[in-house]
Length: 114
Length: 114
Image (tube, rainbow over all chains, first blue to last red; front, side, top):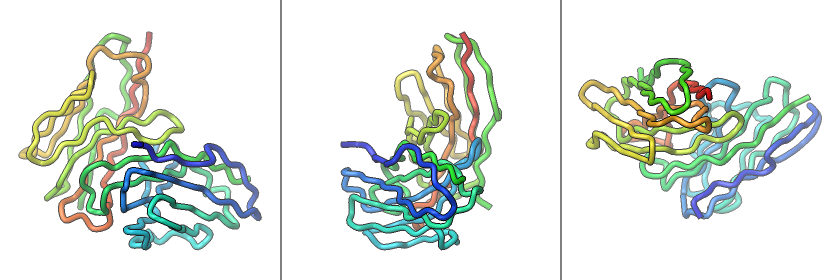
């Protein structure tokens, strides 16, 4: 298995809703990432988990809450989002957090906040 | 400042033609340079990865070159197909990478017309 699987593929949520994005990989990668991508822009790093511990938070608002239940799973909990949070959310994984070797992205969750 | 610049910003070619995309970077030292293909609304898919000691890497109709002395890379696409229409992103991983952070270019938007 050489894939990163993200669910759901599309999500529409109101500003008062609570929802979660899920990401799963079975490549034995020990680093996992959340990115946010706006149209025609490169991905922006949000969070990095290394060996299931949060190692980097790029000053992301607290309405985004990451969770890494085990080495294969990564969640992003969403609460009280704003319309400007609408974007493509990408999960990625790599063998370690040293930026070497395979670095695989999921196909993303298209989030729309209404 | 670590930067990755790509040119052209956008490109239109006819099906069956070849094209070359450029990437200039200031990241130094670096451990590897990657090219990704990203279809609209989907996650980036890895095309090639080259370490600083490699000069060329091929993946089917895609050939990437790297000149570490001039800090330039190119991606050559041979016999283009309609399905090659996508954004192509050059990504550099700094050496001594802390946290798996990657430096992304802004991408080249390629459109292949029949």
